[in-house]
Image (tube, rainbow, N blue to C red; front, side, top):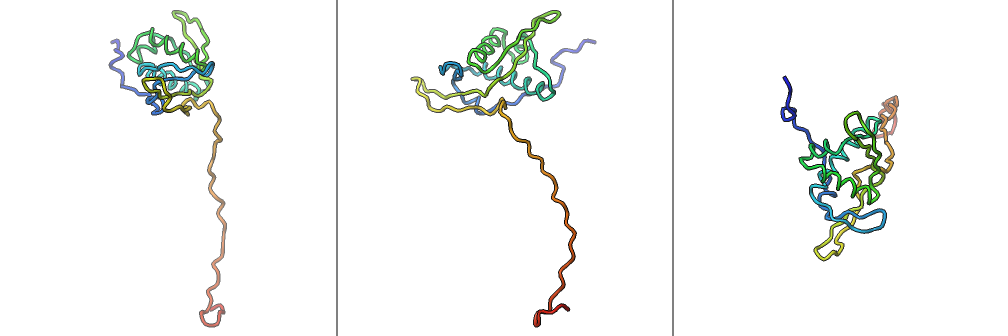
Length: 165
């Protein structure tokens, strides 16, 4: 019996508050601001989640836009637009690969996103860099247990004369 995709357990991907509150993405190439929609934020989060998963396994992340669109309940055109926005702003590197039945691209994040909140007149209210992509190196701190020292109890002293009992 063929199993429908809807029969599979529901899954999730993390979202970052810094991305959700942004209204614009700042181009790392020319410093211009580009409006970012909620749909584009969802697509970004999905691609980022898959990228981080494959990277943690020591692999590159390959996917085709139809599969991304289906996973995000979107259309391929929206996925294409989001990916092109991330690429043209200098945040995503794309490498095309032709599979047996369809084209699949490799996606690599090359820097953290610079996002902004702009008002209706285009005035910058807030600008910040994400820490979602994790392209920066964090030192790994391994806590080791302290060595156990053997000790002998100190001799008790007589309160009056200061002599051991």
